[in-house]
Length: 253
Ligand code: BT5
Image (cartoon, rainbow, N blue to C red; front, side):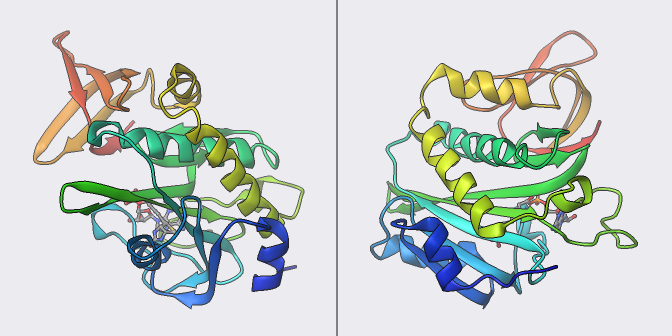
């Protein structure tokens, strides 16, 4: 059974939270960027039933088929240093992970921005900071969750999965959206606290794994041993030296 999202259902779930809903949109991050530069209060969210040009990092495509997924972008205005922006993404990852555990076990995080379900990607997060001159106007946190996307027999079958593939419950999308957003609000109140980092480490499947990371034109390989306070991954290289990687692409495990 599928349900179509609509304004009334979302209004009932989100209550006082400002939101904009579209049946079809290019990318919720694009609309949220415009709204942020206008007057969107912190916590506002853009939600779409279907994205036509949903995007991941490095301009990669993100699939959001109608009635099968969640695509939303949260607008956050906050006072955070540039080097701490990754903590906002960490908060979002934790918010999604907690919400998905209401439906299934086997949830973990993959550095820097994926939520995995039994090792396959169930959610991707795309955080984009918006600057006006040198001033941080806010951060857009794009969250894509696969609810019932049928990946079998597609190019993504080996790497992507959906909640309902691993759950006996049908997902009520407005309720899941609300839970993720409430969890995110709560984690943002702990943005600078140790407990955010502690929880992130606990959830991070990447720790202890031998990884290979593409960071710009540099390739770093070794064992992932920790994340630091800014969300950078610490890698112990085969020669025993440590390397800190702030952003990058986890190529292999
Ligand atoms: C991400 O990028 O994982 C961030 C995805 C963020 C999507 C949300 S949806 C709401 C908001 N509006 C947007 O336009 N974007 C955000 P990245 O790590 O670069 O992963 C992208 C890669 O994941 C693609 O190259 C595909 O291989 C794969 N992929 C595409 N669609 C997928 C899906 N639905 N589930 C799992 N993997 C997918």
